[in-house]
Image (tube, rainbow, N blue to C red; front, side, top):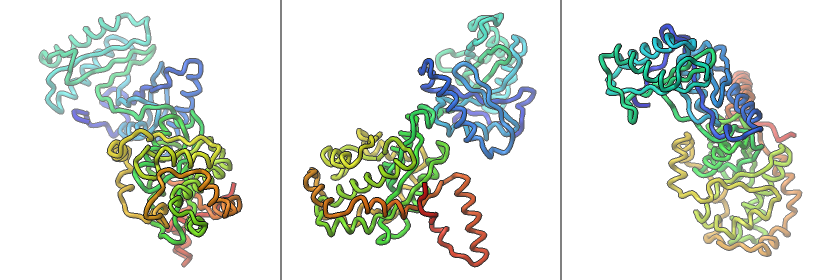
Length: 437
């Protein structure tokens, strides 16, 4: 962030203890249910702080969470910025709530900023949560601003577009001063809206759809379909890397990898023809729905964008929806491709999505894909298969992993131990135990 002071690497910033102010997002609108959303938000924050390297504490104020601990402030900021539900993340210092203490701390803070870079102007903005404080907000702003000008040779005040904006938040016992603001993830706390299963491909779209679903409060697990045994493992590698990146924004969800290749061939042999791609999508949705029932997910999430490719026309999307009783959530249905790519870059999935892989959707794809698949035609193809048995077989062969979770790290350690003993290297290719529920 331009102009941001360097953050400390110890537990104090000069004489003033540091902390981090986390401003709440949409949950301040939730009325009587706000405590439930706040509890979920703080649970997610505690999970994000695991392994940070020291003790931490969380304090709750009105529409703000205060975070501190015996770890570097920049580490707290980095972890907090991952947590969906906070609108902004502000490194701060905290001092006792007295006029003299607040004023002295403000002068020290601005002096430190001026010592590191040129500052053209400043402004002081005060918010009082303690209405019994002896000064009003405007009086404290004027008082602190005047003392800063005296100490810094008449540094100009600009209330409209200040070079440095010093925020002073007065609470009952402590006051927080901050002058740097980082954007948070916004949205609702992950898990507040339930659980969903994301159909995760290796492209740009589905990871962005997953992130958008998380921001609406959905905790996400992931299912990835490969063309195995007719394709290599490259798409599974990508799915693992994408899920690991997405799990940075939520309590780690599981990734289920399902080999679809033989089932795709059965559809082709059954005469799917131009319906092949839509029939495959229906099969994926059926398998995902069965899996969702086992893991208690309440919806499916896909990266479909209306009209982006032939299989994503309105008629084809409706034909896919008919294969499941679960809601199919499509966060990107109205997005343009460039918007999706830009968001993928912002959330850190684009670099993985651009890697080459053998996508199962291209396996056995016809030269021309039907843009208006009809249900009678699809039903006729599916009647030539034993769908129930096929779904059971697909789920029985599913591999399960938790990218970024403790069990994935433990599996990696066990694998290294087996390799040292001359064991198989299959685990290094992303293999895990079959699905058990």
